[in-house]
Each structure stands twice: as C-alpha cells, then as structure tokens.
Length: 479
Image 1: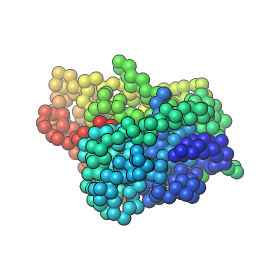
Image 2 (image 1 turned 60 degrees about the vertical axis):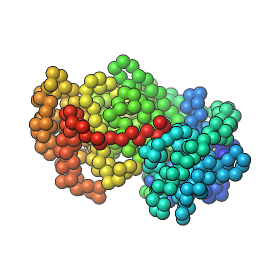
Image 3 (image 1 turned 90 degrees about the vertical axis):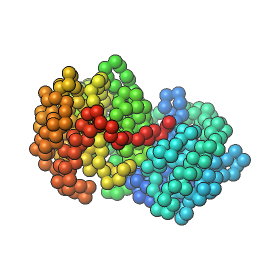
Image 4 (image 1 turned 120 degrees about the vertical axis):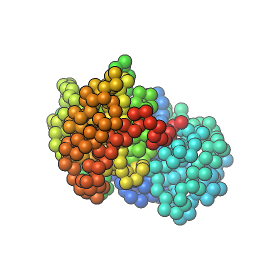
C-alpha cells in the first residue's frame, strides 16, 4: 500500500502500477483538472503541483511536474494542487489575486502551473528580485502574456506578504506529524506490475539483489519520458527518490549521496563551488531541479548529462554498492561507451566524492538553444591549477562531444606546463579538435560542436586571465 496526503485528504492505494503518473491520478482519478497536461515530459510546467516531503526533521515543499512524477513516488508526501490554494479569508490566495490584478493570465491554460511555481517561490523567498522570479519560472511556458505581467504579479505578491499566515505554514506541524506516522517503506502492484519503495539504503541493496534487472527510479526526470513518450514498461520498479540524501563536507572533500537533488546540491555549490552556480541553475527548470538527482544524472550514462563533465574535471570518484560490498572508482572510468557503464546487475550508485578544488580555477559551461530548461548541445567542465604563473595541471571534460562524457586529453596536454597566458589556451582550442569526433544531430552539427569546444577554452581565458568579462548572473531562487 502507498499512502500520502492529497490537499486535506489522506490517500491509501492498494493497487497501482509503477508507470502510473500523478497527473493522471489527479485528473482522471480525483477530478482535479486544474492541473493541466501540456507536454507530458516536464518541459512546459502546466502540470506543476507542490509536493511536501520529510527532509530530516523538516517538511519541505517544492514545485514538481506531475506529468512525470510517478504516483508510487508520492508515498509519505503531501501533494498540494491549485484547488487547495486559498487566502486567509477563504478567497483568492495572494498569488492568485496578484495574477488577476496584474493581468498575468490570458488564455489561462498555463496559469495554474505558473501560480503553483510562484507559490513555491513565495514560500521559499519572501523578497525575490526579477531575476530570481525568472529563475523560478524557467520550467513554465506561456504563449500569451510575454511573461512581464507574470513577473510583476510575483513581485507584487511578495510585497503583499502573508507567508506566516499561509495555511501551509499554519498546518505544517500537523502535516509533518501525519507524514511521520506513515511507514517509510512500501510496495504496491497491479497485476504483474510492481513498485517497490525501500525504507532505507540497506533495504534498497537487498531489493536490488532480489530484482537485479529492476528499473531504478529516482527523480524520474528521464524515466518519466520512457513511460509518457516511449510507452515503455518499467516493472518491476524500485523507487529511491526518498533515499540517499546525505551530504558530508570535510576539509578536502564533498561527499554527497546519489539521491541528492540539484536543488539540494545548490547550497553546497554556492559555498564551495560558486563558479558553477549559474551552470547548475540552467539544468532543466526549477521543477526538474527539485526532482532530478545527481546520482541519476550520472547513472543513466547520457553523453549530454550536465553534471559529469564538471565532476570529471574536478576529479570526482563514485562509490558503487551491491549488497554489502562497495567499490570506488574514478567517475571518468564509469563511462565505458555509449549506453554502457561499469555497473553490474544489482549494483547501484551510492555516493559521489568530489575533491575540493582549493585555489584551482574552475568553470562549467553549457551551450544550448535556449538559455534555460534545455538539453545541452555541448557542456564542459574546467579545473586548472596554476603555480608560479605556470599551468601545473589541467583537467577539462566535455559532454555532447562523444558517446560518453570524456576528458579532452590533447587539449589538457597543450595547457600543462605552459605559462598561464592566452597563447596556451589558443593552442588548447586548436588541440581539442583532435580529441573528439562529434556527431551531427538536431541540437548541433559536428562542426558547430568543434567550434564551440575550442571557443570555450578562449572563454575560460577571457574570464580568468584578468579581463572583466560579465558573463554570469545571480539566479538564486532561494535568495
């Protein structure tokens, strides 16, 4: 049985399939049609709902995409839909009132999703600026308003305040107690289909020994599309989005467990790798970053996954676990060839270990057709150590340039031992053309990718060589 709270009602389901989506349950099962289906791939935001989940002693609410959120993963959560919003007087919520007053809705189809994303921002950041509002709305698309009225509405709602009197604040302790009373582990099935939610990481290890070919589902930002777009069966599925949330910071390393989401990782980035904050904020939209996990981005082995190039450049290692046996290997060795990783049946990615860069120069770049909420054509991570004006070590990794995320060995050699000067980076920009034989696809041609890779070396020099190149913005959702 899976149990969760839907608005003010507890839901208990003894029958459900692992591929059942929260969106279908809301619309078809409960008649809550304010949550819309637009893209069915987590791109347009029309299906945005708030999901509250226990995070230690805290109850955290975040906007997520209901279209690729599997129903089974809502176990022990509080799902809040547009129908549940209300003001203190029982009328419109301050976000809804601001959208009316500032003409933030025209055809209205996308409006509930915008309201729910803005509601999440209103609760998390009571005093956002326009850039932070834009960041919160990266995952919401509107074809009518041009966004300016929606941004004005968000700023007006923040000025109106009222967060401390909001029902989610007033009722938080009660909701936390109800969720805490629900057992952490669960299982649900329908016919031969089976969804398993292990109570902890040890139970996960045992479940994978029993079901070594099971689909491992964390944030479902990728697996969700297997179901909604490719109509693939994922049973048996083991859901782990509620597990592996640990973060440990030591003098030399950052250790994060694989279930840490992009949003959960962001404070660590801000403190220890601020050069990559803008890069992380461009991964998907806010809803995707609230669901997608660092471990999932690595484990699916995509050549255009955003986190591996940066992590490889930093010299990250990963810990894989099968039963009670663990092994550690450099992240770059995990990727063998397209579609193939060094992970045995029944084995799962447990921990990512990131050496702190110290005084090294770090950068992460993403080139895509859209600024936000788009898949990379080329992604790159740089970690350059300079001693006495000479490049002592250079690690540069790319995604989108080969069948796996890979280091640019020839370009690294062109930099290592050379003076930290424009000439060395120009040589690396030419050498990187020999490192990869990229493909042409609908995102970019091979020639474009080669040109971009070379230009990223030139960009790195412009940013770090003493010039004043304003290329980054503060896009912090949480202030």
